[in-house]
Image (cartoon, rainbow, N blue to C red; front, side, top):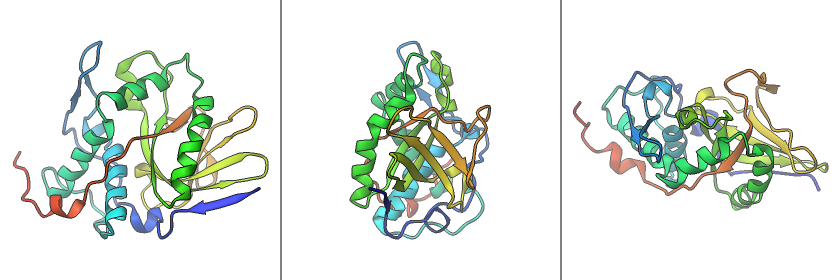
Length: 232
């Protein structure tokens, strides 16, 4: 039976950050990995995980999202909060290992997405946002981990043919309420990422092979934002 579910009261244009995922070349976070340290935390490459986790923090804490439309400056409380949440989103070491495992060319990322659907659906059904890791590269190289992405799902539509369309809050498309990730739970998964109703081109950096639910632990933003800025 067709079904439509949304987390009550959430919309990216209202509850997401109103600035883009575009940052200077700081900070550089080094993540330990069996084959050697990996630097994937350069802010210039995006702070998507930190932004997604922070948006969920604000919403679940019942605190208003900052109204600024300009990216917070380096070492201000909001910037430091987002970068700390970025590091939290990596869930070292298990979370990094999971991203790497899911990006391997030997994996069927679409099938993995279908397997993750039960967890994603259950969480959305109880009115909670879901932090998602998106696999956007198929590679054996740990150095390609930074090409993957992180977003929030705030609902889904499921039709009678088993086609699932997740409603997505994407830091790369701030204030957009029409970003989706869809896949089929029957036959070929046929994963598709779309913005404004248009599927992204297979050659685009936004082309998505699959997704999985990330482990999330809540933090309350107000305490961190009331703290004095960290000095460079």
